[in-house]
Image (cartoon, rainbow, N blue to C red; front, side, top):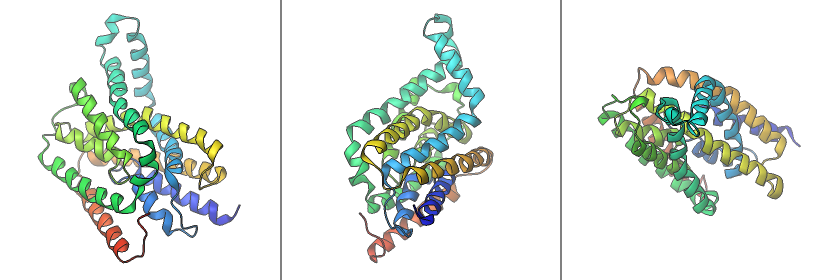
Length: 278
């Protein structure tokens, strides 16, 4: 296995860690940058999903106390009625409900997600369109609601927004944060719930693709993929810390500008024949 394969994997892991939690779409970045590397190929949906195990491990580490508290309360709520009124138990149920849309749609449109929807033209358009929607949400949202006010209906809407990220360019965090802002949640509340909501879906997808890669193979070998996942974990943890501090005081406009600029550049490169849509 060449040194180039390892260095490319480390680079893609770095990109995954830097972009997974920001509202800029990590899958879009891997899809755009992959063909520009010496190997010149799309890393594939499987590689993207597997490296996301690393970034979700960072979420598990950062939110470990919250996650343990939610799991304990949720488990008790299964057999003890009084625990069903506990906020942490309720959060556990809301996360499960919010996971249903991406699970169902992911299975229903599996072939399109791994094929047609990875078209670079679609990716570029999604970067621009959902960047502009994020800008509108950040401007008009009241930003007053906290996670204690999260309703069952809002939990499902968060889940539907997360499911949109099955299309590269939408962004898992960007979709859920946008939905949260439109429903009146604060930037920090929307971001924290986005992180928690992603855990079941991303881990399930990552381990499923890991299992599949043993059977059908992957464009990137297991060793470099493991390195990319490790790099994504380390970098992703630092991004979580920085991002949660940032959204407490700053708007999302820099990310909006970046998304629109990146999408526009990709469309220009596609039109010039520098990049191929497929």
